[in-house]
Image 1 (cartoon, rainbow, N blue to C red):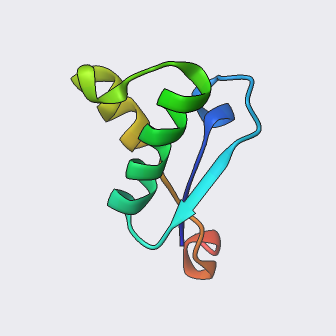
Image 2: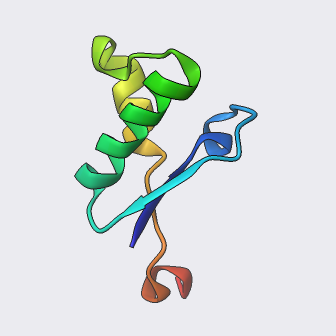
Length: 65
């Protein structure tokens, strides 16, 4: 399971999106950013890369490392 939380990016927002792949999570995060924050992550490569860097692996194996 992968996840993205706005607060990991320094945004005062309790939203967290999850999915099976980085791509699924990023797609949901992009939609959330547009709807909730008025930010279009698809217009900026820098923001898109930053958002992608915030996707976390929540699988039990990742927590053990």
